[in-house]
Length: 80
Image 1 (spheres, helix red, strand yellow):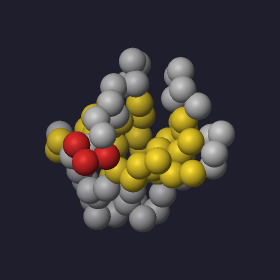
Image 2 (cartoon, one colour):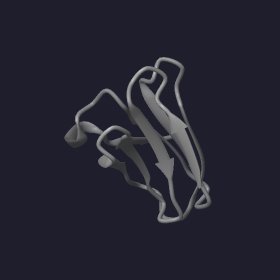
Image 3 (cartoon, helix red, strand yellow):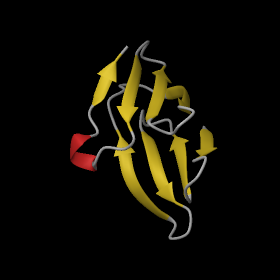
Image 4 (cartoon, one colour):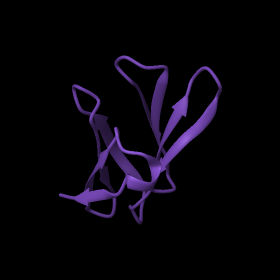
């Protein structure tokens, strides 16, 4: 449902009906990371001004914050 470009890197973010957001390398066309945690479709998301965080809102009535500058192992979400 939605795609946003990173403000300064060759990366885009997408959301999907599977309840996940993904980070894509636009030069390689490969998925770099998957942001998981919602049980239903991600209705909306945005990247913070300095591209530190990805904020998501879902049909499951939850919102989450993901730290973008963390490694994939550290990219746990925080419920808000």
